[in-house]
Image (cartoon, rainbow, N blue to C red; front, side, top):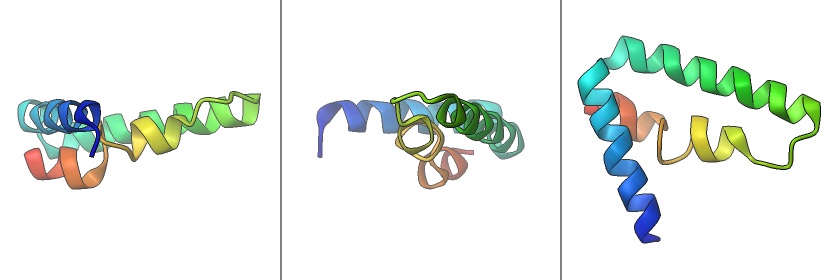
Length: 66
């Protein structure tokens, strides 16, 4: 496991604990929507895999924190 993934996971859990599960769920939806728009636009950054479902807002991290 990469140390930055561990840091991002801890931060995602803190975001989930601070905002609560409903708000975190809404933010994940917006992040996924932004990732879909970025993918359609031709971006090479994997927004959905890294941000929306990755260590930051992934359900196993953010929802459990809430």
